[in-house]
Length: 248
Image (cartoon, rainbow, N blue to C red):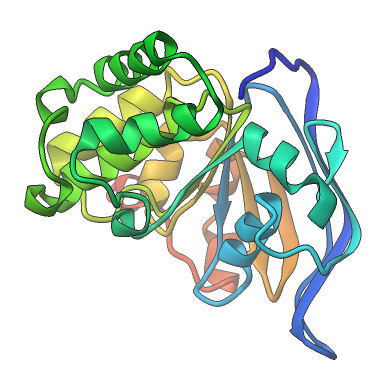
């Protein structure tokens, strides 16, 4: 849960990871981030973006180097602590929604923390209100559109009040209205946000900082409006300018 940590909240140093021996997926990753930053992780398919996100939340712990989240190294014994501070919004919303109603799904995490029922209901109310989806409270997730499911899955994370929110391709399945709604919402969230996306216009609108990965390494790390305007850099690494810039 969000602890009010200020300053550096994520520290990655010389991180490498392989699924199989001698076939590295990530190599020598160095990345520091502070509370409240918004960081886009971009790159072509299969270059390690999703793997890096899964490492941050402790889904894999057999890495080399150092990975410190909210003051604790990501190790098997620290996973409960890590997951109290990091919220992960999966690309597939159905992986996150498994109870009978949206309200039940949002309440699930806070209840597992042992919060009082009054506090649980307050967090449910706050998450629904923040996302402007109060009308989905009693709705079955099986009867919702892809965009509605995405917003509901984000609500389950916001109710946990994490220090770090990781989002894997959040704009997938969103119609233009819900996409714009999500952009506006993310720009109000105060936690450290790390967003992987092929939608570079979405990254332009939500992230102040962008990290470009290729072949498991960080190629560039800097201001979003600098990196995403560098046509030569993007083209070299199998990406294109954001659509909004390519039309200029």
